[in-house]
Length: 225
Length: 117
Image: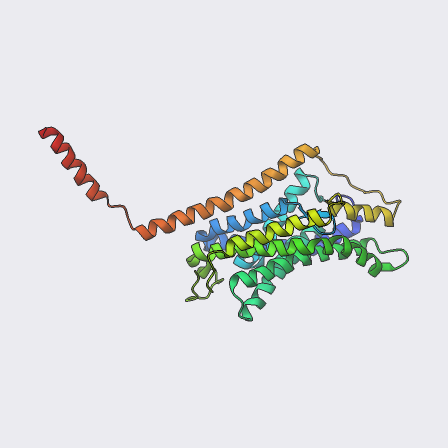
């Protein structure tokens, strides 16, 4: 989902920065408050960030014969709500842009929108819906992570289709092309990310019952084993 | 929900299968990154396109591999430190505080015995 450095027209880079900026401001404020009010959950926040670091560094093979990486945004968004992960995701992208020439500074606004913002918000919404439908935490977490992963790549495909509409078939022709590159490749990886997120959630509910209750992830009296 | 004893193993197995199947099924492909495929698609759609900005610094592919490994290692380090810490803490709580007084009495008795001897 990294749009390479210099591969978005300058005005669109600026536009995506402008779209992402308010989300970053809220994310910084909400994370500051979380850190001040819930010092006991700092280590758990570290786990969510660490998980995102690991998954976004792994380029996995997919059935389409190309490789791509998961985003790792789902776990943290399920635990803390979307905002801390908006910050974490953007930090990961900044690190990869500066040190790895992966993504870029000019495209950071666009990439942060697809991975950090769409990724975190969609994971959180899907998790809420899943819980409301009575799914267990690991099951709701699976769908949250998998769908968020997939939506991130759909967002990137849309961003590129806006920037490079096909000369003959226009936006939609271009969109189908970029979707076939990103979204199809991503399907098995999104499932893998969902499974891994689910696995971590199983262990977290085992060891971190109190902390998760404090965060409101678990309802009181809900028992896990 | 009861999580079965074998559930974690099954989940890890599922991820491994998801990674291995493509390697076998699509073994004729080169598994290039989707990002660079998109880059190629842009160049095909608009052959005249020149990136207007280039990365400030680009590591060699070996250095990039190292940095990606460091990123993953750092993340995994934090995750497993936390689980080790929590697992130890839970064990500590189940066993209760160590019985220090008893230990001291024993040591004293042994010391006294050795003096008498």
